[in-house]
Amino acid sequence: MTWRYWAIFLGVLIGASGVPFPLVTLVVLSGFYAHNGLLSYPYAVAVVAVAAITGHNLGYLMGRWLGRAFFERYGRYVGVTPGRLSKVENTFARYGNKVILVAPFVWGLRSSIAPVCGLAKMRFRTFFVYNAVAAIVWDNAMMAIGFTFGQHWETAKSVVHNLSIVLAIALLGAVIYYRYRKKRLKIARKENG
Image (cartoon, rainbow, N blue to C red; front, side, top):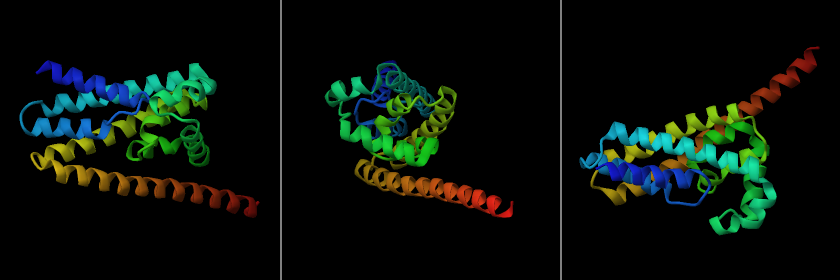
């Protein structure tokens, strides 16, 4: 039984570090296995969370230490193309640190946000906090889906896809609303003196 936890840990670690890997499938499958008694649900949640946080931190450090030139030259071997890197950087520049909270729910951002945060030289403490919150929320949501649907694997995959879209839109909407309110408050302060 221990090998299953190690397999999950390594898979999530690889995917979270910036290498494209079927993270959603692996995490939902972990919940499915827990439902069927092949894993302990609390242990599996802990393993996935620790692996995701560790993997994202490794991705952040790679981005910070290796720099953009490295990713432009070698990133294509792991699915990090210059175009994808630019899109993530633009999203990050536009929405700021809060995009980290949305990233796990958006395909393309999920695996590349950590290296981009490192490339942007974001403060590590800020990255760590946002990343930990996002990873724990996402991991628990995906594992709960796998656990809840048990043997209904196709239904679970469909729900995961739809839930990811809904949560990404909701979180992005919250970020946009927050930025709009902040901007309106600045304008109001300037007008009032």
